[in-house]
Structures are given as structure tokens and as C-alpha cells.
Length: 324
Ligand code: F6P
Picture (cartoon, rainbow, N blue to C red):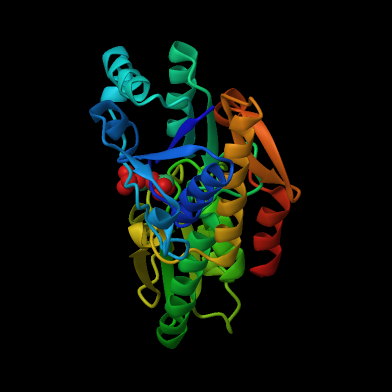
């Protein structure tokens, strides 16, 4: 293998830049020519591909976003789109790919490998932490800390005015951000897509809060089965029927996707980026480099996409017990 290319795809995540840097520099260290594909599969289809050097990835380890930009490509879902992408890679002589992204990225990579056989190793880049085959995904730790910072601030004003706050965090299909920011932020309740939310129980608990507890924080993952934070707040409010209780909603939104990556995310990203290139050179393909129990592990894309990553049950128990 002489030439490889790296790209980021799907929702960006803090630490993607550190991962790009690690893949580029490991490739160069190992004597490879390294290319960057811009805007994920879109750029692969359009041939938006440039040679990267060691200096190309200087001064990015600390930055959020992705220097290669990211996109969700509809065209890559079509056989014609994938054919164009293959032809562009073939023309440049690219023999291996490092794909940084989440399950959508790996679904595309798996199909592309099955059709055209270009070896691909992935790195788990998503704030959602919903990828099987790694304890944590790149960007998750930063997103949790961003959410936590916001929760701490909201708690100040919630306490000052004795209000009940519903704080919506990201997580269309996964509640990892909600659970960890909820534990760290001392939330009274956390609502996640993985479990059925018991509204009656929430209403009952809010009605019976001990006298000294006049404000409450409820963290809602955007994909909760009962709806978003605003919808849930309205349902709770209509059932509590207490004119003395004030309800507020804050949606944190894309603020959770940006910002300088934490140390944890930079280290994880650097390890995965290096492992992806080493994996390619070792003959690995159609798999993701992740970190489990402190060790680098390679997991097939099939398992990364197909196997569920359940929430840690002890975490849910913690929230229940500590919120009394
Ligand atoms: O990065 C994952 C994620 O943050 C989800 O939790 C969220 O629903 C989604 O991306 C939103 O992404 P976008 O605004 O880019 O479509």
C-alpha cells in the first residue's frame, strides 16, 4: 500500500481534527502518500481530494469541527454515486481509506468495500457514543462537558427562582449524553430513547418533592419516546396543575457539537487515527479501530452498525438513587 486517503463524514464531533492529524502523520511516518477527501462521500464523488503533508495538519489538534469538512451524502446511497467515487480514487491510485464518522459513515464504507474492495478502516467519530466496538466515541466527552457546563449554569438560575427546568440535549437514538450529563449535573430525572419514560412517576415525584427542594433539573435526550423537552414539559405542566410551579425549557442544540476537544477526546482520537493506519498496513479492512478497556480493538463494520450499545444500567440506577 502506497497511497491512502482520510475523510470525515456525518455529524462532526470535537476530536475529528486530532484523528485526521494522527492518521495523516502515522501514514507519512510509515512512508505513505496521504490524501484528504473533503466533505466526506460528497467530495469522494466530486473528486475533491488533495494531498496532505505533515504541515497540513499543524495547529488542528485542539480545534473542534473538521478541517476536511463533513456532509451527509444522498448521492453515495446510489450505485452511480459510488461508481463515480471509485473512479476518482482509482485515478489517484488510492489503495486504502480511513473513514472517521458514525454508523451512517460505516454503513456506506461497508457497502463500498463490498462493491469495490478498497480496504477501509474506520474511526468512531460522533458525539452520540452509540457505536458498538468502542467504550467511547470521539467527541462524546467534549459534548458531555459542554452540556454539563450549561446544566451548572441553568441550575444557578433554577435555584434562584425555584423553577423546574427541562434541558434538552442531543441524542436522536441514544441517551449517553443525557445520562452522563445528568449524573454529573445532579439531575432529578433523565429521559432517554432507550427506556420508556414513565410520565406518571415524574409527575408524582415532582408533586412530592421535599420542601427544601424547590427547583429541579430534568435532562431530556432529544429522541425520548414522549417527544422533545418542550412537548414533555407541556404534558408535565398540564398534569401538575400547580400555578405556583414555574416550568422552563432550554434546548442546548448544536453547541454540543463544537468547541475544543477535551484531553480524553484528543487522546482517543489520536489513538484511533494511528490504529486505523496501522490496521490498513496490517491488512485489516471493513472494520473500525476503537478502544475498549484501554486497548485498541478492531471490530467489523457489520458489528459496529448491527450490534446495539446499551446504556450502562448502573448509571440509570445512580440517577434514581441520588435524586431523592
Ligand atoms: O452527531 C449526532 C447528532 O448530534 C444527533 O444526536 C442529532 O440528532 C444529529 O446529530 C443532528 O445532526 P444534524 O443537525 O447535523 O442533522
